[in-house]
Length: 153
Image (cartoon, rainbow, N blue to C red; front, top):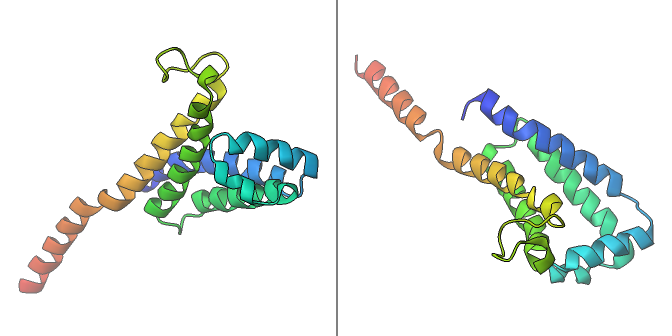
């Protein structure tokens, strides 16, 4: 995956997630509990985090993910794995409430449209992950052949 493609997939989601995370750090306990209750509809394990600290924990997690997406030294596969996991968590909120989807259980209803848009983050995460794991193979083979040919001449 070339630099411009990688940057296009990482910069905007990274900045958005970083900003979202910073906004949650140190949030009031009642707001933190509200977000935790909502998150628990899709990921019940978040109830194990003390409710007054949930917003800050989520905020630092989002800040770390946003920073990883923005940091050019973090490999695409690692940034993509983090974004994929994060977006799966967000989409679990979408699928946890039947009111978010049409009767087919997939297409978004008017209520679920804002959460369904997180599917774009899943696509970006998977693109970075797969591109990072398998995208450089052809280039590496060509480089190895060229190096071997140069060595043998």
